[in-house]
Length: 451
Image (spheres, rainbow, N blue to C red):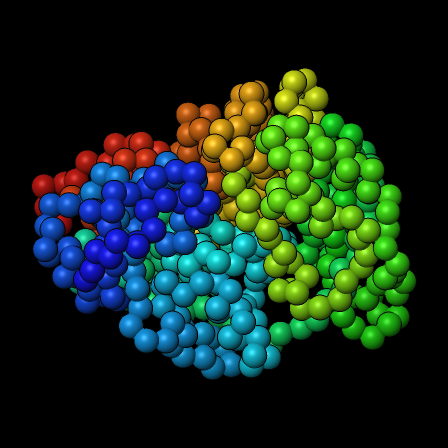
């Protein structure tokens, strides 16, 4: 158990302080965490992974900020059906290791894979594809250290398994995770640009004909860039696009140039090699691609930003998109980046908007200036967007920016069960951060015989 001076105490991009250095600890595995809990029996513990979550959710200034560090390898075991890793293993490490053996996880990788496995599960990380839910839906078992310092194992056969699949860091500290694997495969990604009208008319159909669909919608111009991804198979079969192009398409370039210029005006940085501009520049001269899902989708460029995402029931997409179009068109603030659309299938995670239903995740980005500020009107627009999507049954992504007062989280079918489990496992609230306490509300009353 150490308190090194170089422990990270800010979020990943350095714009927000998360913890005080003198209250920050690195602990080695379950034994190190148990010792820390015993040494500070009254302290609240805030777990910090790769620090990608929105800062208020991982505020570590009140209590102990804990960084779990593994002893030895982070990949513990691999066979043809599963891989077991330490909780501080990154998603990138997992995928790269299993791909070396011709395997992959049964879900798409997210665009950012520097997240730790525990952090990705704790916040509801997902990609896209109606045949899958969250990353958490690939989990077969996990171990965690409880508030009393004891270590436990939870499997899919346990009644409370779904609570741990999106745990918010509030149930204990994950130490190991076992994920399903399957043989890796190659896919073809067809890319094209179309209109907002075609998006609203065809989005659901696109998702039922392709394994994975991701779209970027420039709402003000009502133009949409689409990726449809299907498994590779012999030409002439129903799963392979018989005609595809590797010739670069330039039809999107004028819109990209205008977006980069607007972004530069708002942030004060017109360098197109800067990270925010490069996120837009990836779409210049686009063409179809072929590869496995990691090669196709893992293309994120981290840049200081406010990142917000709301999951809306897929059967409400048309109406939600129409209302969103009106809200954004009426705002004086122009978006820095197109709205990102990523559908997923039903999830087993109790606290996910995708629990037991198909959803489309509407994603929004506002890039920050070098001093961490954001342009006038941007936060107001994000609030208006949340309000309109909440009216269509939308619920927030837990690891990103959201205004909790705009959402009725009790509409999650297992919300009260999660709160009950959390209170039972951690009655003193040692893993209950101020932000989490605010979002979850007052703890359920415990009976005289409880605990």
